Image 1: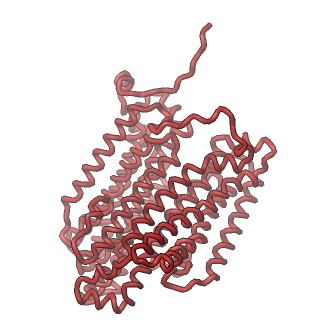
Image 2: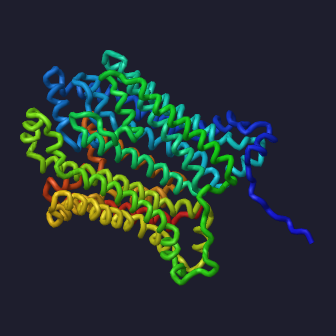
Image 3: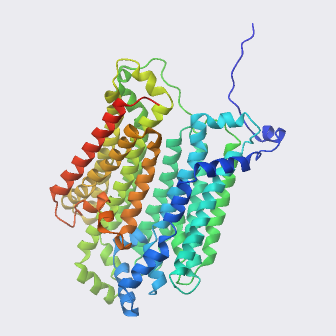
Length: 552
């Protein structure tokens, strides 16, 4: 008796050689991906390039228009660890250097855009089964990855060149505009390669995104701590461990260190070669990180939807908790005495004294560190809420809902983690950071509550991003992944809106701007209560919409 066995397609170099080419169909897939991204791709390219000259350079020019003012501006930046951690150092007292300094976060924002682009067109396609359908035709094994990298890297390069033209159009002399544009593009290209490797490691798109974002968060942390500790002295060694630090070390309008771009090029080449090698050694639809076999019999904890959601969400929650705690540990261990480190000369000490002393600088660093942790926790919360979307589109939700489980109960089981997960993340990371800070300052009782308050006050803003995700899922299910666009827009508004010349009502859309700036400022309950009420109302509307609509 013969049994037909269904086998998953496996592609190695041998199979690729027998086909027309491992890269066959790349151009066709490139056209497909460009068509799919015909709105998103131009949007992030223009948002990360066009404002550079017309907004940031021009706004600096309006505020600071004399050499003395520029020198004072540069000194104030070098005396603020929070500014150094957020944006990086300013290397010259010229208009161009001041303008591109404020645009430092663009290096991280373009990395987010390229990561999402590569994962969307590679691992997400495999997870949904569309990649296997294409692979059954004359499409080569490497075609999808090649087309995805071409779209992401091409978008990054276009962003850099348009940004350089925007800065040049603002009337800034020198080649610094091109140096900044290429450095920005290099950041995006490096992290496109990081995403290409991450896509080979896990069978799930969410996990692949998590791996790539963890690398981005780690490199941002290294760069931030390195720049905050360096102050007006030599560059800290931690900065050189981060591709984001390399981009800032290109130093546009302050020497234009073109050779540093070779570090980006070498790293990208190694990562892309590694991605292709890993791709050739795994099954289609599988990841190199093996999935564990489940227990033969389900435990009682899986009897309800909450137990199932816990089984699905727990690994991601633990991974995020570890990552954010490491970030908090590093920041907490370097905050104490950072004002004394910056005060290496009398001028700097005078500036620090006028700003309120070292304690004010340390409080500012705590606020900055935990605002960044709040943004990271918001990304986790969106990812947890999007599990509703992935379960519905994979037809697993329909199987659950055919029983006695109601829609609201099923959705609430995942929202427990989308809303409660950030509480755990901030509570643990707040304790870790507060203990590290307190032990370094020999004042755990005084520092721990202050740091913990700065961490937990981020929750209302995080829940607003969760609410936006639930609203899209309930009312516009097809557009649910746009939640990542909402998050990216909020991140850009937080990082770049302060001097962009935007109307106040636009700046007020940033939820983080309404939170009490603990521990430096006093706590006020009114904005916190309002943000929580808005989030609750939006989530309610989203759940009602989900209850009334058809399953996709």
